[in-house]
Image (cartoon, rainbow, N blue to C red; front, side):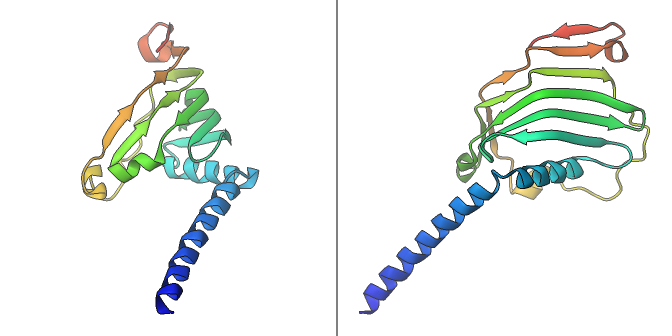
Length: 165
């Protein structure tokens, strides 16, 4: 009798975790969750007032494929980098093998208007290197990188130039 109870308990726990995972996956597909995610990522990458990052319209099948309509990076002098049509496909399950696996990273267009203004004060506080935070640097595999239009304006190289990656 006790073995049967244990069996049903373990089965119930596993089933409950699967249902929870499906519910979370369904929840993050909502527009409210995508807006929340874009806002949190923007805040995490911004160091006001010296760097402001804004994401516009996060789409895709989160967390496996993330599409961002537009990304702006600005500083006290204004926008210095604009990226459009960003696609990040990655394999979260590869993290179990201590690997960051990215089958695709692309942007339809990146424009670098000028070099960023780094005249702001350095960020206070001691930061740990990534190897200490993660217990070692994981393996990294980028399988495809594509930027059909990479524009460097005069503020970067002295002459405007277009490239493709």
